[in-house]
Length: 454
Image (cartoon, rainbow, N blue to C red):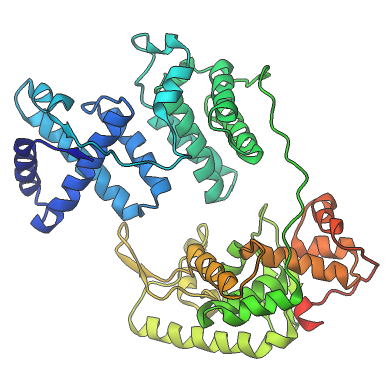
């Protein structure tokens, strides 16, 4: 890790106090500055160029830094640049990389991280011409966000597409968006396939993201990308668990997450669909669970496992008690989707709209100074399932989605109709559902029930 000149640290700390940064936060701010300077040196960026900040923040995301940590890191570096602007002319040379002493062992980055040196070497040398590189893409990112939201695509799609556009920006050294053409995409996709050896799904996802970026943000015709073969996915046979293996995993799961596992398997839900369930999604009298805004913004219904009725109703009672405590604490309601609260002002505080799997603590919304309740985080459930799989001593690589695969396979084993299973899974095309026929011989049966009720 880089060791910063003592004089720079002293001046930086004085500047932090001038901006009313608490003394106990100075160590964190200096840490972020050190990380930033180390980043610029490793990847040959100019440490005095503020345009490198977005690249630095993007680098923190795969390292699982929280949103708050990323904001603090950005603020730390921005204050550093304000310090440079405040000092007399020549301060950039005074604090140049020549005075940053590098220790023998630099931190090792993950193998799949972006190697900016390799990117730069692979790309056309004409990119180094004055005026072509180092341009701001801020407007393009905002336009990308707007185009995604106006089509009601999921936040994960925005995150994914933005990530590929950021990698393209890094690869082209922030070339002016107006000068981008299909040859830049061709070189970038070739780099992904040859140098980074990405999976077929990642290469195709990058292609689709950049196709969307060119068509809807840059408003340019993408054209043909000759010379780059789009990777084909290999035939996929999903990992499935036997009914005994499912039971073993759920039995050793932490009590807080065991019911999540039962719904994932018992109703064939995706993890995001399960965690976004609200109280009003359950119709116990009709025995129906309604999933709203599933993948592709589709709604569907599935039968509630009869064997889990008592547990599910007990969970409703727990949520009710927690909701009463929240109301007494004068909280601002559960997080709501889209603009429903503008139409129904108090919907977030109504019991029917509470999360079926609420988070342990309230979330503070800094922009509005509100306290709201969110649902369980996906990573917590994923970690709980991973621990349970290890504890159950399974030899299969099982994840949250494996429960959904097992649901479909067990329905096929029970001779249910493939079209019925397609509807229960929410697949648009029956060919997607047909992947489960590779391991199961099925006969026709049409009445849908949960495999938990077999």
